[in-house]
View (cartoon, helix red, strand yellow):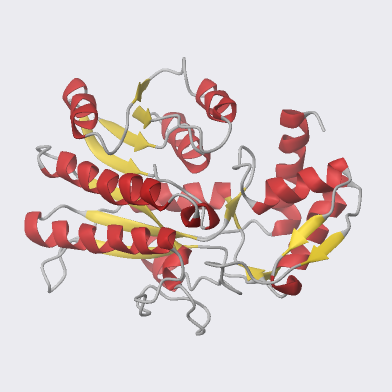
Length: 326
Protein backbone atom coordinates (compact mmCIF):
# COMPACT_ATOMS: atom_id res chain seq x y z
CA UNK A 1 0.00 0.00 0.00
CA UNK A 2 1.21 3.54 -0.65
CA UNK A 3 0.35 7.20 -0.15
CA UNK A 4 -0.09 9.63 -3.04
CA UNK A 5 1.30 13.05 -2.12
CA UNK A 6 0.38 15.82 -4.54
CA UNK A 7 2.59 18.89 -4.53
CA UNK A 8 5.51 16.61 -3.63
CA UNK A 9 8.03 19.16 -4.96
CA UNK A 10 6.40 21.91 -2.90
CA UNK A 11 7.39 23.14 0.54
CA UNK A 12 4.97 21.18 2.72
CA UNK A 13 4.63 18.32 0.25
CA UNK A 14 8.36 17.53 0.23
CA UNK A 15 8.51 17.45 4.03
CA UNK A 16 5.40 15.25 4.27
CA UNK A 17 6.71 12.84 1.63
CA UNK A 18 10.06 12.61 3.42
CA UNK A 19 8.39 11.93 6.79
CA UNK A 20 6.25 9.19 5.25
CA UNK A 21 9.31 7.57 3.68
CA UNK A 22 11.17 7.76 6.98
CA UNK A 23 8.45 5.77 8.69
CA UNK A 24 8.58 3.08 6.00
CA UNK A 25 5.69 4.09 3.76
CA UNK A 26 5.79 3.85 -0.03
CA UNK A 27 5.11 7.28 -1.54
CA UNK A 28 3.94 8.28 -5.00
CA UNK A 29 4.73 11.96 -5.61
CA UNK A 30 2.86 14.14 -8.08
CA UNK A 31 3.69 17.72 -9.06
CA UNK A 32 3.45 19.86 -12.19
CA UNK A 33 6.71 21.72 -11.37
CA UNK A 34 5.25 25.00 -12.63
CA UNK A 35 7.04 28.34 -12.78
CA UNK A 36 5.02 30.31 -10.22
CA UNK A 37 8.41 30.62 -8.52
CA UNK A 38 11.84 29.38 -9.60
CA UNK A 39 11.45 25.68 -10.53
CA UNK A 40 15.08 25.14 -9.49
CA UNK A 41 13.92 25.16 -5.86
CA UNK A 42 11.26 22.57 -6.65
CA UNK A 43 13.80 20.35 -8.39
CA UNK A 44 16.16 20.73 -5.42
CA UNK A 45 13.41 19.63 -3.04
CA UNK A 46 12.56 16.72 -5.30
CA UNK A 47 16.23 15.69 -5.34
CA UNK A 48 16.01 15.05 -1.58
CA UNK A 49 13.35 12.40 -2.27
CA UNK A 50 14.45 10.79 -5.52
CA UNK A 51 16.48 7.65 -5.10
CA UNK A 52 14.95 6.84 -1.74
CA UNK A 53 13.49 3.38 -1.43
CA UNK A 54 9.74 3.40 -1.92
CA UNK A 55 9.51 6.75 -3.76
CA UNK A 56 8.11 7.20 -7.26
CA UNK A 57 7.44 10.52 -8.96
CA UNK A 58 5.15 11.67 -11.76
CA UNK A 59 5.06 15.11 -13.36
CA UNK A 60 1.37 15.75 -13.97
CA UNK A 61 -1.12 18.60 -14.13
CA UNK A 62 -3.86 18.30 -11.51
CA UNK A 63 -6.53 19.89 -13.66
CA UNK A 64 -5.93 17.39 -16.47
CA UNK A 65 -8.14 14.44 -15.64
CA UNK A 66 -6.40 11.97 -17.95
CA UNK A 67 -2.96 12.73 -16.50
CA UNK A 68 -4.10 12.21 -12.92
CA UNK A 69 -6.06 9.06 -13.71
CA UNK A 70 -3.00 7.61 -15.47
CA UNK A 71 -1.01 8.06 -12.25
CA UNK A 72 -3.69 6.22 -10.26
CA UNK A 73 -3.82 3.45 -12.88
CA UNK A 74 -0.03 3.04 -12.74
CA UNK A 75 -0.17 2.59 -8.95
CA UNK A 76 -3.04 0.30 -7.92
CA UNK A 77 -1.45 0.13 -4.46
CA UNK A 78 -2.42 3.75 -3.61
CA UNK A 79 -4.87 3.57 -0.70
CA UNK A 80 -4.44 7.04 0.86
CA UNK A 81 -4.01 10.53 -0.58
CA UNK A 82 -2.46 13.68 0.87
CA UNK A 83 -3.50 16.41 -1.53
CA UNK A 84 -1.28 19.45 -0.99
CA UNK A 85 -0.82 20.76 -4.54
CA UNK A 86 -2.44 24.12 -5.22
CA UNK A 87 -1.83 27.52 -6.69
CA UNK A 88 -0.61 29.34 -3.60
CA UNK A 89 -0.34 32.99 -2.64
CA UNK A 90 -3.02 35.49 -1.66
CA UNK A 91 -1.65 38.49 -3.55
CA UNK A 92 -0.96 36.62 -6.80
CA UNK A 93 -4.64 35.69 -6.97
CA UNK A 94 -5.31 39.34 -7.78
CA UNK A 95 -3.06 39.07 -10.84
CA UNK A 96 -3.93 35.65 -12.20
CA UNK A 97 -7.34 34.52 -10.92
CA UNK A 98 -7.77 31.87 -13.62
CA UNK A 99 -4.76 29.92 -12.31
CA UNK A 100 -6.46 29.60 -8.91
CA UNK A 101 -9.77 28.30 -10.21
CA UNK A 102 -8.04 25.86 -12.56
CA UNK A 103 -5.61 24.44 -10.00
CA UNK A 104 -7.47 24.80 -6.71
CA UNK A 105 -11.05 24.11 -7.80
CA UNK A 106 -10.87 22.01 -10.97
CA UNK A 107 -7.71 20.26 -9.75
CA UNK A 108 -9.38 19.46 -6.43
CA UNK A 109 -12.41 18.05 -8.23
CA UNK A 110 -10.21 15.81 -10.39
CA UNK A 111 -8.49 14.47 -7.28
CA UNK A 112 -11.80 13.72 -5.58
CA UNK A 113 -13.08 11.95 -8.68
CA UNK A 114 -9.94 9.82 -8.83
CA UNK A 115 -10.37 8.96 -5.15
CA UNK A 116 -14.09 8.28 -5.54
CA UNK A 117 -13.56 5.52 -8.08
CA UNK A 118 -10.51 4.00 -6.35
CA UNK A 119 -11.68 0.83 -4.63
CA UNK A 120 -10.46 0.61 -1.05
CA UNK A 121 -9.30 4.21 -0.71
CA UNK A 122 -9.04 4.78 3.04
CA UNK A 123 -8.59 8.51 3.40
CA UNK A 124 -8.39 11.74 1.39
CA UNK A 125 -6.49 14.42 3.33
CA UNK A 126 -6.30 17.85 1.71
CA UNK A 127 -4.81 21.25 2.36
CA UNK A 128 -7.05 24.14 3.23
CA UNK A 129 -5.89 27.46 4.65
CA UNK A 130 -6.33 29.89 7.52
CA UNK A 131 -7.28 32.41 4.83
CA UNK A 132 -10.81 30.93 4.76
CA UNK A 133 -11.52 32.83 7.99
CA UNK A 134 -11.36 36.07 5.99
CA UNK A 135 -11.89 39.19 8.01
CA UNK A 136 -13.32 37.40 11.07
CA UNK A 137 -12.65 39.49 14.15
CA UNK A 138 -13.27 36.73 16.72
CA UNK A 139 -9.93 35.33 17.80
CA UNK A 140 -8.70 32.66 17.91
CA UNK A 141 -10.21 31.18 14.74
CA UNK A 142 -12.08 27.91 15.37
CA UNK A 143 -13.16 25.33 12.76
CA UNK A 144 -16.81 25.86 13.63
CA UNK A 145 -16.66 29.63 12.97
CA UNK A 146 -18.54 31.01 9.97
CA UNK A 147 -16.31 31.30 6.91
CA UNK A 148 -18.62 32.78 4.30
CA UNK A 149 -16.88 36.12 3.78
CA UNK A 150 -13.46 35.47 2.17
CA UNK A 151 -11.34 38.52 1.35
CA UNK A 152 -9.27 36.94 -1.43
CA UNK A 153 -9.96 34.64 -4.36
CA UNK A 154 -7.35 32.22 -2.97
CA UNK A 155 -9.41 31.94 0.23
CA UNK A 156 -12.60 31.47 -1.78
CA UNK A 157 -11.07 28.57 -3.72
CA UNK A 158 -9.94 26.90 -0.51
CA UNK A 159 -13.41 27.24 0.98
CA UNK A 160 -14.84 25.79 -2.22
CA UNK A 161 -12.54 22.79 -1.73
CA UNK A 162 -13.92 22.27 1.77
CA UNK A 163 -17.51 22.41 0.56
CA UNK A 164 -16.88 20.06 -2.36
CA UNK A 165 -15.11 17.59 -0.07
CA UNK A 166 -18.00 17.65 2.38
CA UNK A 167 -20.37 17.00 -0.52
CA UNK A 168 -18.34 14.01 -1.76
CA UNK A 169 -18.17 12.61 1.75
CA UNK A 170 -21.97 12.83 1.85
CA UNK A 171 -22.67 11.48 -1.63
CA UNK A 172 -20.03 8.77 -1.87
CA UNK A 173 -18.82 8.16 1.68
CA UNK A 174 -15.31 9.37 0.78
CA UNK A 175 -13.48 9.77 4.13
CA UNK A 176 -11.95 13.25 3.95
CA UNK A 177 -10.07 15.58 6.27
CA UNK A 178 -9.32 19.22 5.49
CA UNK A 179 -6.40 20.89 7.25
CA UNK A 180 -6.35 24.66 7.62
CA UNK A 181 -2.66 25.59 7.68
CA UNK A 182 -1.56 28.73 9.50
CA UNK A 183 1.50 30.52 7.98
CA UNK A 184 3.87 27.58 7.71
CA UNK A 185 7.59 28.37 7.66
CA UNK A 186 10.90 26.56 7.86
CA UNK A 187 13.70 25.12 5.70
CA UNK A 188 12.82 24.74 2.01
CA UNK A 189 10.09 27.40 2.31
CA UNK A 190 8.69 29.33 -0.63
CA UNK A 191 10.47 32.46 -1.94
CA UNK A 192 7.21 34.42 -2.11
CA UNK A 193 6.57 34.07 1.64
CA UNK A 194 7.61 36.54 4.32
CA UNK A 195 10.44 34.53 5.99
CA UNK A 196 12.32 34.25 2.70
CA UNK A 197 11.61 37.84 1.68
CA UNK A 198 12.64 39.22 5.09
CA UNK A 199 15.80 37.12 5.38
CA UNK A 200 16.85 38.04 1.86
CA UNK A 201 16.29 41.74 2.55
CA UNK A 202 18.21 41.65 5.83
CA UNK A 203 21.18 39.81 4.34
CA UNK A 204 21.39 41.96 1.21
CA UNK A 205 20.90 45.29 2.96
CA UNK A 206 17.56 46.10 1.36
CA UNK A 207 14.62 47.60 3.27
CA UNK A 208 11.71 45.43 4.39
CA UNK A 209 8.19 46.36 3.34
CA UNK A 210 5.92 45.97 6.35
CA UNK A 211 2.21 46.23 5.62
CA UNK A 212 -0.58 47.72 7.75
CA UNK A 213 2.01 50.00 9.36
CA UNK A 214 3.40 46.96 11.15
CA UNK A 215 0.16 46.22 13.00
CA UNK A 216 0.00 42.60 11.86
CA UNK A 217 -0.08 39.33 13.77
CA UNK A 218 0.35 35.83 12.41
CA UNK A 219 0.15 32.33 13.85
CA UNK A 220 3.54 31.24 12.49
CA UNK A 221 3.77 27.45 12.46
CA UNK A 222 7.02 25.54 12.04
CA UNK A 223 7.11 22.92 9.31
CA UNK A 224 7.96 19.97 11.59
CA UNK A 225 4.86 20.65 13.71
CA UNK A 226 2.68 20.84 10.61
CA UNK A 227 4.07 17.59 9.21
CA UNK A 228 3.33 15.83 12.50
CA UNK A 229 -0.25 17.12 12.27
CA UNK A 230 -0.66 15.95 8.67
CA UNK A 231 0.52 12.43 9.48
CA UNK A 232 -1.66 12.29 12.59
CA UNK A 233 -4.67 13.28 10.50
CA UNK A 234 -3.79 10.77 7.77
CA UNK A 235 -3.74 7.97 10.34
CA UNK A 236 -7.20 8.85 11.66
CA UNK A 237 -9.83 8.67 8.91
CA UNK A 238 -13.09 10.24 10.08
CA UNK A 239 -16.17 8.17 10.67
CA UNK A 240 -19.56 9.35 9.51
CA UNK A 241 -21.29 11.77 11.86
CA UNK A 242 -25.03 11.96 12.41
CA UNK A 243 -25.19 13.76 9.06
CA UNK A 244 -23.63 10.74 7.37
CA UNK A 245 -20.60 12.69 6.22
CA UNK A 246 -17.16 11.29 7.06
CA UNK A 247 -15.57 14.72 6.75
CA UNK A 248 -13.63 16.78 9.29
CA UNK A 249 -11.88 20.15 9.36
CA UNK A 250 -8.96 20.99 11.64
CA UNK A 251 -6.66 23.94 12.28
CA UNK A 252 -2.92 23.26 12.21
CA UNK A 253 -1.37 26.32 13.81
CA UNK A 254 0.96 27.18 16.65
CA UNK A 255 -1.81 28.64 18.89
CA UNK A 256 0.03 31.98 19.13
CA UNK A 257 -0.60 35.27 17.33
CA UNK A 258 2.94 36.63 16.98
CA UNK A 259 3.37 40.33 16.18
CA UNK A 260 4.95 40.61 12.75
CA UNK A 261 7.60 43.00 14.02
CA UNK A 262 8.66 40.37 16.59
CA UNK A 263 8.98 37.83 13.79
CA UNK A 264 11.16 40.22 11.81
CA UNK A 265 13.27 40.88 14.89
CA UNK A 266 13.84 37.12 15.27
CA UNK A 267 15.06 36.97 11.67
CA UNK A 268 17.36 39.94 12.27
CA UNK A 269 18.86 38.23 15.34
CA UNK A 270 19.40 35.00 13.42
CA UNK A 271 21.06 36.91 10.57
CA UNK A 272 23.12 39.07 12.91
CA UNK A 273 21.95 42.25 11.17
CA UNK A 274 19.13 44.78 11.29
CA UNK A 275 17.12 46.14 8.40
CA UNK A 276 15.34 49.35 7.51
CA UNK A 277 11.57 48.90 7.66
CA UNK A 278 9.20 50.74 5.33
CA UNK A 279 5.72 50.87 6.83
CA UNK A 280 3.00 50.61 4.20
CA UNK A 281 -0.82 50.34 4.13
CA UNK A 282 -2.71 47.05 4.29
CA UNK A 283 -2.67 45.16 1.00
CA UNK A 284 -5.88 44.03 -0.75
CA UNK A 285 -6.87 40.51 0.25
CA UNK A 286 -4.77 40.57 3.43
CA UNK A 287 -5.98 40.33 7.03
CA UNK A 288 -4.65 41.96 10.19
CA UNK A 289 -4.37 38.87 12.39
CA UNK A 290 -4.52 35.08 12.34
CA UNK A 291 -4.61 32.86 15.39
CA UNK A 292 -5.54 29.17 15.50
CA UNK A 293 -7.80 27.49 18.00
CA UNK A 294 -6.27 24.00 17.91
CA UNK A 295 -8.38 22.39 20.64
CA UNK A 296 -10.10 20.04 18.16
CA UNK A 297 -6.84 18.91 16.54
CA UNK A 298 -5.30 18.43 19.98
CA UNK A 299 -8.28 16.33 21.11
CA UNK A 300 -8.77 14.24 17.96
CA UNK A 301 -5.27 14.07 16.47
CA UNK A 302 -2.98 14.46 19.46
CA UNK A 303 -1.56 17.51 17.71
CA UNK A 304 1.00 19.26 19.92
CA UNK A 305 3.03 22.03 18.22
CA UNK A 306 6.15 22.81 20.21
CA UNK A 307 8.38 25.05 18.09
CA UNK A 308 8.45 28.73 19.01
CA UNK A 309 9.79 31.26 16.52
CA UNK A 310 12.88 31.59 18.73
CA UNK A 311 13.74 27.99 17.79
CA UNK A 312 12.29 27.80 14.30
CA UNK A 313 13.65 30.99 12.77
CA UNK A 314 17.36 30.18 13.35
CA UNK A 315 16.80 26.81 11.66
CA UNK A 316 15.19 28.49 8.68
CA UNK A 317 17.89 31.15 8.40
CA UNK A 318 20.68 28.53 8.60
CA UNK A 319 19.09 26.60 5.74
CA UNK A 320 18.39 29.80 3.77
CA UNK A 321 22.00 30.98 3.98
CA UNK A 322 23.28 27.59 2.95
CA UNK A 323 20.86 27.34 0.00
CA UNK A 324 21.31 30.90 -1.29
CA UNK A 325 24.92 31.49 -0.31
CA UNK A 326 24.03 34.79 1.36
